[in-house]
Image (cartoon, rainbow, N blue to C red; front, side, top):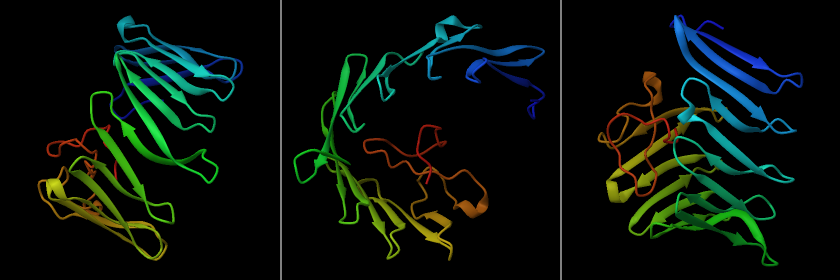
Length: 219
């Protein structure tokens, strides 16, 4: 397909319609990724033909095919899981974060995240209401709280330590209509109705301000 900037992006597939190659050209080659996949189509290698130092390798857990390894230009990443697919650990280089979960009536894990013990030090704790809605994420004195309306929709986000708050409004179909940040120092100064990119830097321990990074979750 031809992109708005005139570059041409081409996708190739193998006989099973699994990804085989992606190229982007525009006078000169801009991107050339060559895929190797396993028997069910999960990528195990994305070879960057133009810049081999940017190669990416992936590993998976049999038989659920949970992602267990993701190495690339960002460094070495690996994960472990419990029997129902909850993440137990995430290792970045030599640093490992450990995950714990709210227990069920017989002592097994539910899918509700209870806490992350951070390999670099500290604890990030999570709280839920009786309906299962996440109500709080706390790392020491840095707390993000979530409030819900009578219909169970997220109605407010607050981060008191940073002086930030956001109210969310919905229409009669429960579509998000407006999300206005009450604190102008937040990443985005406008609500969604302006058409501007709006996001919320509620990552505990993170900072706000400047341009919204792609990795930050959007409201």
